[in-house]
Length: 634
Image (cartoon, helix red, strand yellow):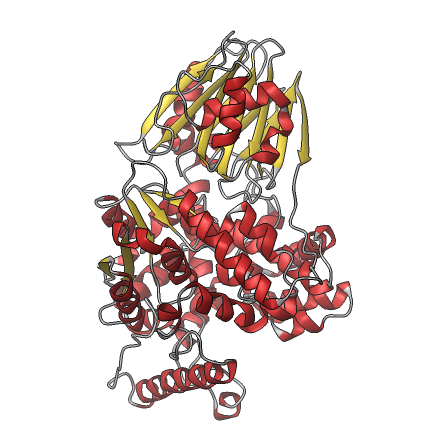
């Protein structure tokens, strides 16, 4: 992902290191680079030429301060005019110059006023100090390492590895990834390299680092607000959030699925919708595309469909792993080719990021809602997140390594929950999932995508988030208030089927459940026919945009990708029992024993997520560990 990178140390005299760091996060020939070196630091920005395209750094009037920034700020027109009245001059007149002058006026806490997604680096040339800020939600990751009396920062881990390779792998991160499919809290795969926590101010001076948090998620129900008032406020705040993100001379698009989040974004556009291109990706004739087409017809939008070809997607596996520093996974290999297509038409893609998790209650299952103690909450989160149970991990890991890391995943989970805030207890669970699953896993897709186009997230607008935190969990559960909100936002779009249930989005919950059972029954029948016929009767699943479980069962390219990664040559055999991983591959797609069918959601064995994460880890080792000297440029 393009972004910023830098080194801060006394008597800095290695400009070639900054250039090397910048080159390591420049993944396209057309990416643009800004470089700058002083006596105590070097900084660079790699960008798409979309948000704040003017060269950086930008200096204040007396050249005592300068700023690098990646990202976008929204809705600061009044504050900018006030700064002008106080005598500040705007020669560039963009987001970073506004931030620099606001820093001059009120100090580092100016960041509390910002609404957007960003990473900001302010260099104080007189004090030889660096101040780093990121947005409330950490949606533009920044990694850092402090060593040898210097600070290294970069928007990708590989840029830091380029300065000092041959780092030891972090066993806690490996244990997290292979247990949950994501790395928890601020860890990366490498010891000594961390991700800056969301809503942070990092100050570095005289070899010392200080990090403070300026904001945090904290759900607190507003008991004096009615459901109708919440709905009205949700409509108003999301509409304002979308309007803020449609300002400027850009080509706009929206990623439109068959779900509710992107549909809400379209509804909130109002009369602006016809000027925005809607993109939907999926296999040919899938329900996702059909539902999205109904939304665009009602909204009078230009609809572009990007068809996925399962045979071609495995060739992008390395891209997905490389661009995400190994923290994404190869199930999102469709992102590089689809976003290359998007780039031909748009500059900025609006995304309904995690709207269903924030407002729709998709994180709120029964065990989380019913947890009465912290221990019960931790257990509920563990069962919700775990790819592999402890018994399965005993078979999966090499025994010595299993004994070494056995307690680490639960320790990471417990540590994260203890830091979580919110009442009642279930809100602490939501907090944990937003700060970990969304920030450290879901966002990996956007990190890959932002190599092609910029993204904007109306659902992560400050006003919208502040409002959602006041809504009690009982109203968020099962999309209760979400359905009311969508009906108020757009009655027409609420009458279009919801992809997850097959019935209209405004239908009562009981009909949603009937629809979900029907769709599940169809999927089971297809699986049963395929299994009983030995694969001769194959009715492709065209419900969602992709079916990785099916592809991993019947597509030679996908089976070849995973099979070739999890074989006797695997670097991961140092950690994993490769024979057990291969056994999972053999069993995947087979018919379950009759006694297990009644309790299972499907009729066939589905190890697709487990296998894809294991293959991702193997590919990470090949790209980042085996080839570390290549990363270092030696």
